Image 1 (cartoon, rainbow, N blue to C red):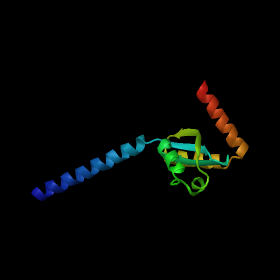
Image 2: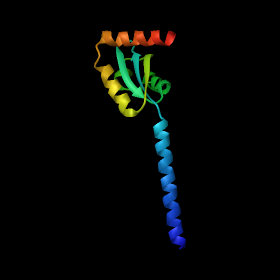
Image 3: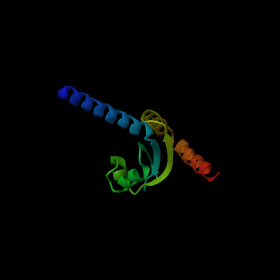
Length: 114
């Protein structure tokens, strides 16, 4: 019985760890962001920690594109409920024209002032 109890205890610990991991993942928020590069171009990405990601871009450890266009400045961010929603939104934004991205950025700033 000792081995059986030990096995059950280990299974219970594993289930608890898995449950906690699912909760942590569920609470994580994803952000889609736009940065303006030194040459005035836009770069769109997604992350769970915007501040940290911007630092990475400016240190040349972000995306290849921003490494050669640094420094970058955060001009827009948007929270998403999960990774899938963030990926869809990132793709939507990347497909926008430059003018439409500029308008999105402008509207985002206006919304924050109200």
